[in-house]
Image (cartoon, rainbow, N blue to C red; front, side, top):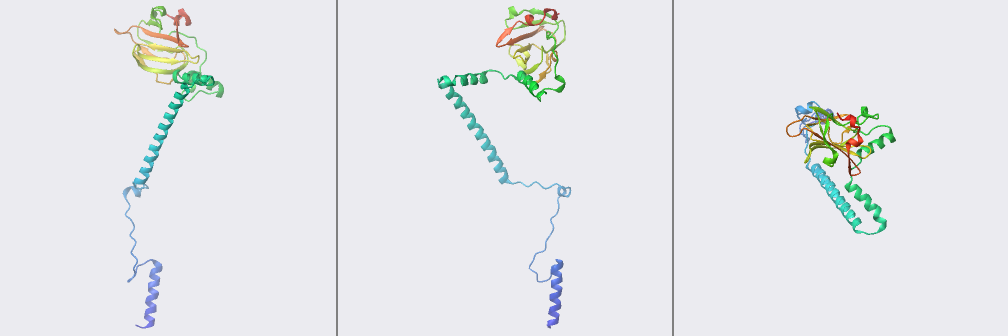
Length: 253
């Protein structure tokens, strides 16, 4: 084969290489574009399972639970150790710890402090519930069927028929559900640290930690064979107060 023919063939092969066209005798494999799935055509990448990433995420979760468990144990041991020590310097710490573990959190009082400090209610308080001073009234219209002196903790009010149950004053609902003694019951905590309880209700229209305003409807009562009265009590500083002495008797119809 003449040198001229070889040069021509070499020139053709070089031009084919430049254009990416395979030529005879080439050792390179042809590139075949992948077939797109239907999801990929619309811009959704296929889900690729990565056992390594899943295992790492599980390890982080286990580590988090273990850390919380260790901190809980340390907190328990710290409180136990605090109560075992008789140093007078730790007396105030013991009293504070005892109050934190036994007393209810003052949601209503904190809400009032927050409004006074920052000028707006907390997130769980709706904007329209900024209150003006309201006249306290009995939660239902009716006559007192059982006095505080007879009951010892509250009074029983007998409405004439189906009626709405309203909150005595502004506060935060700290209980809304079934009570062993008073069945369907609502307990509202007020800014002055007092609590009012409304028992033997037919329906409950509020939920736990809901902010309520004075005279706002919180439930409903319909007399029936099992109960024809609503239980109502006022508690402050772990002592029950006669509602008739707090609310004007004229408000009870």
